[in-house]
Length: 211
Image (tube, rainbow, N blue to C red; front, side):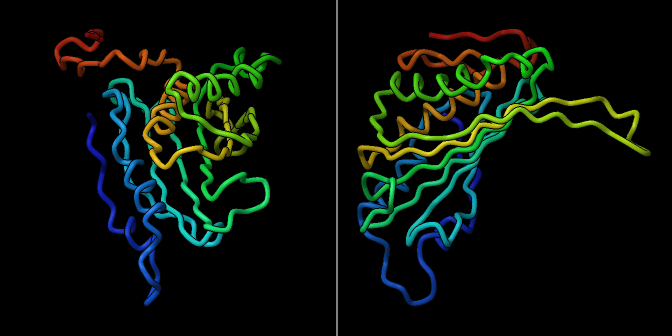
């Protein structure tokens, strides 16, 4: 299991001033974000949570690496409103963001949007992370340099933004699915749920063993 990078903002994202402690259901759900076991290419960290989207919130971030190259980044935000909100179908909502560099010929494929969305839904199903009311967007971004940046290479990126309502308080399966989504966007096939990855040996970067 890759350890979280701690952040002092994690607790302050849940309570402000003299407000009472957050509801137990939210606390259990937020703690489950940290229990996911991820493959060694992924590094997780706590992030400051947005304060205005719901009465209670928490957030984590992740990066996918191959050797020292960062291939994809993402955020996963947990929102909790005991009264629910329009379109949520429950008190919980997860909001996900993933960005990854891609080759131009891939981002120009008209099927990229549906395929990228299927990465998320199939990953949720594979990890038995029940959900409802899912929605989102897939964006292709092209960056070109001009002026004194005219010699910079053209870069193309995929951005996926999604939200859905988890059916259970234990969100570890949803974190696993989000990590699988980032791996696929980075061009790394995710492991089956019952297969664990061993860290690559530093003297053999091509080694990628499973048990």
